[in-house]
Image (cartoon, rainbow, N blue to C red; front, side, top):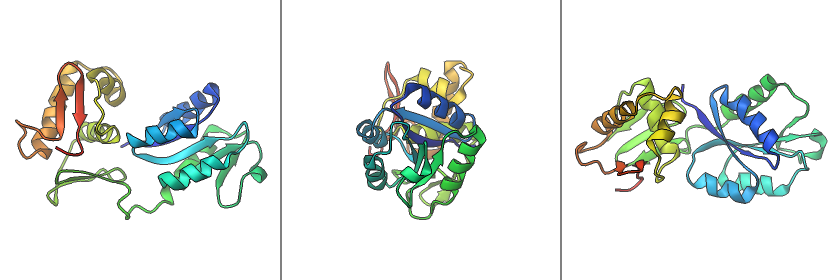
Length: 216
């Protein structure tokens, strides 16, 4: 199951940790920041499914504006739903963990998936974050579960150098031998690159790790 990335904005490190723990235990990966300004920077290198704004200190219209700008569905965690403007998804504290997950699942499921927002493209390859389908020059490409997880992580961090250690930690979780990462990178190249021996997109950054380039 591919993890969906969720942007979490919270001024409280404690709240951010709690929200992340709940999301990460399910089909999501939380990426946290303290304010809307930092959120804009994170959005440049991540493909987020939705945005959660922790309004413990009060709701800011900046969150709604940012949600519109980034074209992300917004869920506000607040003390009282009445404080949140109409039309915005809100969840009042206190709430149980499974209530948060149900709300996130509902919001995510309600989003249209046919407008290209959930499609990542590089070269003649298209990858759908929602279905996990991959095509190359219009032809379906079969990837193993772990190859999909790796491709998903590379796409979510496109044009950013990722260390082998980070990939091992985030994709495999159980810290496999580093050669496992190399093997799976080679498998992706063979299936997705026109010339696997001279990759244009899934590239090695010597001494640092790997990078998925959106342009050759």
